[in-house]
Image 1: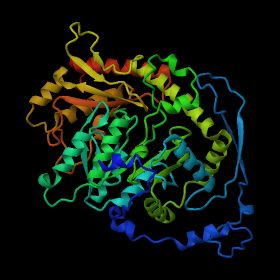
Image 2: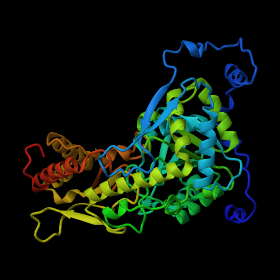
Image 3: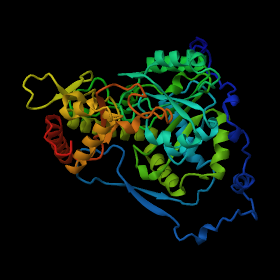
Image 4: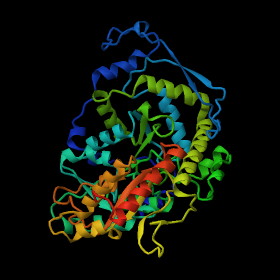
Length: 502
């Protein structure tokens, strides 16, 4: 395909993709007041424009001192080591965000992800949720169809459902979204939905996907990108778990803590879609939420100049910019660490999440698909659930086999029960909550396909199958063991039919 051929040429610039902008985004104008701010920084400038800005000498906070770990701290040890002090300034207010932080992010992106297009730009945002919201409001018209993974992040849907938009789920396997199914859906679109505009936006979380934990390799990304070129699709690569990839060569829990060089760590990462993007049709969402702290509410777009300019117009009048405190603190820290210092921090962080995954998944090897049976099932013929240990992120996606429960079989035989899978899922969740252990129901992640497709049957879902998401990121090992013990007790009761509620 053309996209592949272009990769052998000199680094390209983005193609003209302005036809993807929606009417709302095309109608945006620059905020003239924001244009003034950039001139206020000129040497010798006397600004009487102001824009309602108080004088910095009248801020009650002149600076702050933040104590941080050094980037090479061993995160497995409880001892407090000597901390690095970061002094910060809080007077940032431009819509584009702190220029030094944008420059750092640009160099970091170039070093780590090696984008194919030479003209990519950085624009700060208030984290990936804010970023995705602005992308939808830039590209989607009311009633549009949006291509999504077979199971997708519910908050990503919640903002476009009120616009009347509809999700188009693309089938997944152990590598994530299927390029063959994506091709099939797009190729047959006009025949299947005559007169309905074909989707032009694809949203996916390709590393440690929330909820499935699946991670897409480079070959799969390249195939998906080429399908998107063929059908003129914009790709939103939402990648908050990118740096929590677990290397294929590591199988034991303790091995995750062995030191690696920053470059060895980078070499172990799956490439971003940016590497294959010769046309500027990828908008990447990066965030510091999973690597520094979610309360920062700080992230950034990586996109072509057309999209960053339109996104800036939205930022000027909606969120203005991320918190000046967050920008200043992050930049002070990252400038002290440097790019490779931050990379070393990420490598250590990855090891800790890998260890936590193995606490929950019992030290699995890369390809182990684990099946869990009732402890009293001597024949091991009726599984309770199974899962594929994730190769990135924070979640295990457990596939439950409901037909092993007599209660579910009763629900299935009841002609008045419209959606037995949904009812049984709710009952299991309620029993878990009563036992003081929380799991996330899989139904939360079903793509919204309209009011006529809200039941398992209407969505053509699997009969007698349900899912729950387990997160290993937040609890200690002791809490995890207690939670799993409680979960096991509930499942034994549920699948034996001993529960009064079930």
